[in-house]
Length: 448
Image (cartoon, rainbow, N blue to C red):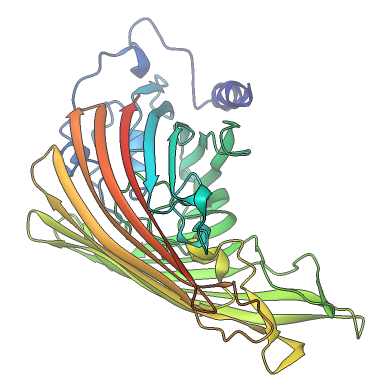
């Protein structure tokens, strides 16, 4: 119902502002035109990934269906490749596109399980028991739909409104709709809910596992962001303020309070190659974490910061490398394995009356081999580690997690692909106790 209301509102707004009009008999709308295969970069890419061009795309002709969609679409991890239905106003100043994917996967855990629908090393039970040896699961909650409206303003240029939803909004298995992204973009600014600016969307490999490597940082945030390309589209700079999330370990002296300062991520990217398909990106973030001292009755804050080097490099025709490495203090929202772990800060080991941010780091690397235009094989390794001595922390707290994977994606038709994947993960606690899990997954995806 909410998505239907958004669709009606976007189309009505376009007509009322003069950017859209009912289709005329002389010219059918884009949604009525017969669909023809496009010689786009998406068809030439390995199965399972969108076009990795980030800074520069060759714009399709104005009359080509879905041109506005492809010109304004993000490329990279879990980003929709293209929509199949589009309406364009007769004056070519407004486009509305609709599409999505139906994704069904089945998994079998053995020799250890993960207490999550996704493969998260943090959730591996330590120690295991009779109930954590094997598990079967099936899931379609990562299926998603996307709507996009593009209005071409004479003064602002393209003004884009994007709404992307899946079914991960409630408890596992509830299939509650969730808004992944909902934002407006114009003149390099983005306002709304989007993937966090700290994330390099093109630095992660394609996986069946929705979580992806545990050292990556794919997550959503409410953002106000500005991005600009320069140096003949070889470089891009981005700066944002984002709604903060804090997850710390408190004691009898300190208590949580609402945050009062946004997080400030920023990045500088350099791309090269004929289609800018390779890049290296340096990313940083600064944040201030607020809490209340019950003993003194005053609020206090702790500084947090992080740095990341990431990228993707084409290594000859069949090979592509993906990587990221991150280090920081108090940045659990920006390392997947540590989100919600309570490890942004903790009482100092030498003095429980003081809090300190916890140092942490992670890294992942993966190599993709394109065996043909329809078949791709990928394998990689990822690890995350918390550098904190036991001190006041319980001995069963997380210290390190590892994530190893290999998969194969096969494109059966332009709209359908299948995949298989093997995952191995480990978790080690502060006291040295460890656990492991294995998972085999199969997936069918149909785009519409």
